[in-house]
Length: 313
Image (cartoon, rainbow, N blue to C red):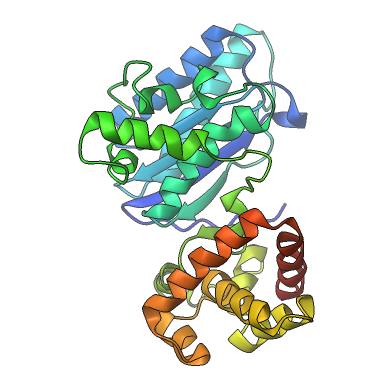
């Protein structure tokens, strides 16, 4: 089995998920879910984990997790190991409860992490389990919006800090951020993770590649590394956009800027020079293009076609 790419350092943020073996349920009762939350709490006490968001589905879980001590493996071994032991003893069973290794995607600690909290909290709605995120008991969403008491081990301040200066305003604004999202059009932000391993801005990806991945490209046991040693050039991405959008030069250029910003790993300065615009214009153009995609299903399909060409590398 191929090994996952793990990038470990103090202060790192991760989206962590793990699914039941053979996709079977890992939570079968209220007590099971309560027990899992107890292990999350003990991970914060014993290993310094910071839990920013969670959602417990029937056969898998999601966490937005921060590791001040750079000890992801220790934290997850505790949570998964302790819960598996509890589950097996309770049901007089043996063997693996979870399917393979847990998946951990390194996330930039800014708007990317904030967006992931929305993704995590919308999981029950996307799955058709709840009509609204606030109806689902087994996620951190009710604590974010003030509907239920905030556990001492759950930290909402990082995320809510983006939505207002006082508790009431930030909770209301965050509720709007989550509940005004059209779930039918919502795509997982994890789809944008490079190599299925890192989610963040081009500058963040460049920084992580330089600091933690340089020289690791020869480790053949980790296939994800090829995404960082053989990244597409700006020209590759521009050509992919042109091939996907053949009848509108202006739209093709807008798509090129967005795709270069999201997927090239080039610096803002390099992208700005390529398109002969200012650096701040790149981020603004990307935001406008994202809004345009949300309103245009055909455009979303064209961008998927461009991505398929880009990801051949």
